[in-house]
Length: 305
Length: 313
Image (cartoon, each protein chain N blue to C red):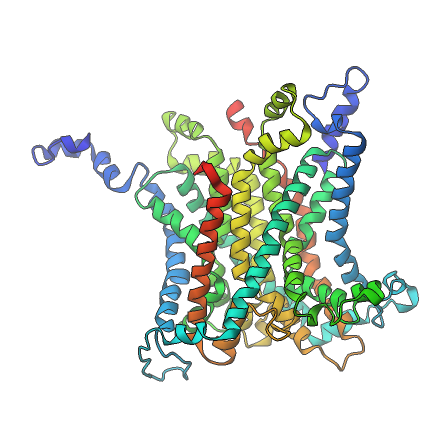
C-alpha cells in the first residue's frame, strides 16, 4: 500500500510543471481505456471477495437464508451461535494449535533447506547439479496421491509415526515450489556480482548468507506464504495419519464435520461456515501483514549500484 | 586441458593443486553438493522410495495386513493395469480431467495476463486489487469449498438469484455442469498466485522497451503483443505447467462437493485412488491408477512445454 502511494505523490509534484510520463505509463492512459481497465480489475476483485462476504454472512445467520434480502446483514437473523456450535462440535483451539505446529514445522524446514538447494542450483556449478534440478522438477510431476498409499504404509506401519507431528510434517518438509522460486530469484541475480565477491576473497558461505539471501528477501517471503498455504490447506494426509481427534488439524476436523453435517444442529451450514471463518482468518490476517513485502523486488539496484 | 597432464609422472605436482582434481570430479563449487544434500535425502525418502514402492505395489497383489503379519505378495504382472484400463469408471475419471484442463488452463492464462497487466499499469487501488486477488489462494480450500456449497447448493444463493433460470438438475448434481464448475472454482482459487508470478515478470520488463516501441509508432495492442507477451513467456510456460500438475492432483474439490458424483461425473483419478486404495483396501489397483496418472501428466506437460516455449528452446 505504501508502494502505491509513493508514485502518486511523485506525479502530483510533477503535474504543475510538465506532465512527464516517462516514469509512469499509467498517467498517459486515462480516458476510456483507463476506465475499462479499472472496471475489469474491479470486477475481478469483486469475484474474488464476494464468496468471503457470503462466508461471513452465512456464518452469522441464525436461520439459513439464501434470498437476496437475506444476504444483507439483517439484525433479527444475526447470531454468534454458529461459532459456539462449531466450537462444541470440534475442538477449535486445539485443532488450530495442531494446524499451527504442522505448518510451522514445514515452513521452517523449507526455508532452511530450500534456500540452500536453491542457491546451489542457481549460483554454483557442481557434479550432479543437473540431477538435483531434475529431482526438483520430477517432484512437481509426481502427484501426492500416487505417493499417498506407499507413504501411508511406510509412515504409519513401518515408521510407526501415526498421530505424530513428525509423520504429519515429513512428506511436506521441503516445498519444491519454494525451491523453484528460490532458484528463479537467485538466477535473476547476475553471476557477475558473485564473481566479483569471489575475486574480492569472500567465502562461498559468506556470499550465500550476506549477499545472495538478502538479495532474494522478496523470494523468502513469497516462498513462506506459498509454503504456509500447502500444509494449512492440506487435510488428506493429516486425516490419514491422525485417528486421534486431539491431533487433528483444523482443516481435517472441519472437513470431517462438514461431511458428517451434523443434522442435529439448527443451522449446520452456518456452523460449517463459522468453522470456515475460523480456518480462514489466521491466514488472511497473516497474509495482510506480510503482503507489503511482496512488491520490493528491486533486484536491479544490486548491479546498477 | 587437464587430461593433457600425465598424472602418473609427478604426484607432487598433483598435490600442489588439490583443487583441480576435486574440481574435475565434483565440479567448480563442490559446496553445492553439501547444500543440496538435505533436499536430495528428503526427495529420496519421501518421493523416490515411495515411488518405487508404488510401482512395486502396482505389479503385485498387495493388501493391508495387521502389523507384524508376514504375507506373500505374489507378482501379478500387468493384471492391475489391465483391470484399471478396462474399468469405465477410471476412463471417465481421466476424461473428466481433460474437460477440466480445457477450461482451467486457457482461463487461468487469459485472466492471469489480463489482470496482471492491468494491475501493472495502474497506480491507484493497486494494493487493494493485489490483496483481493490473492485472498482466495491463501485461504484453506476446505473453507472456500464450504462457501461454494453454500452458493451452488440446490437451494443455494446462485439458484435463488437465477430463479427460474436455475439449471435442472442443480449445479452440484448436474453431470454436465459439475466439472466446469470445479474448473472455475480452481481457477478462482489459484489465480492470485499466477497473477503474482506474472506481475513479477511484468515489473522486470524494461520501460525503455515500451518507450522505444511507442516511439516507433506501436499501438497499445502491438506493444502488448511484441513487448509484454515475449517478456512474460517463461512465466506463461510455468503457469501452464503448474496448472497441469494441479489438475492431476484434484481431490479435495470433488471429495467435499460431490464425492465424485453424480454418476462419476466429477470423479478424478486421485479421488478414485483414495476410494479404491484406502476405503476398499486395494492399494495395488490404486497404485496402477497413479502410474497411469503420472504418465498422462508428463505427456501433457511435455506437449505444453513445446507449445508455450516455442522457439525459445
